[in-house]
Image (cartoon, rainbow, N blue to C red):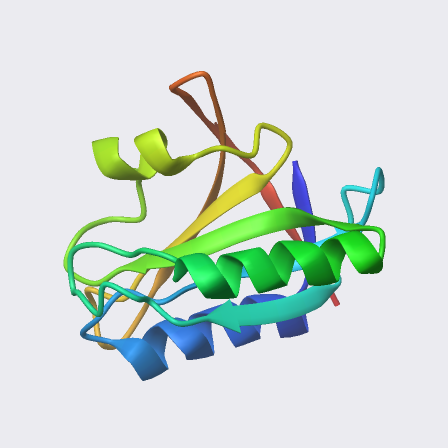
Length: 135
């Protein structure tokens, strides 16, 4: 189960809305071994695409160095889907390289509402998990 503070959910959704119609992407880092998302890190979608996201390799290297220096790990890896439901695509599954991370997808296909869902993706297997939003 993903337990996440409301302000982090709001930041993810706001980032997804800001970058729409392109997909938004980012990470929420947390203390190593804690499974606690704490530090919101929006990233640039280097693909600048409404159907695909890609972290810039240089930005990703800097992110991992920064997390290492702070004894953090990527607790949440998030991105948005702009025209489809919040469910991982085959490409999303192929990019899922953090077996301990929660993969959050936000759908912004509906201008008046959004979907916010979380998954574990391990060895190509997608498992949806409940999300508990903490106030």
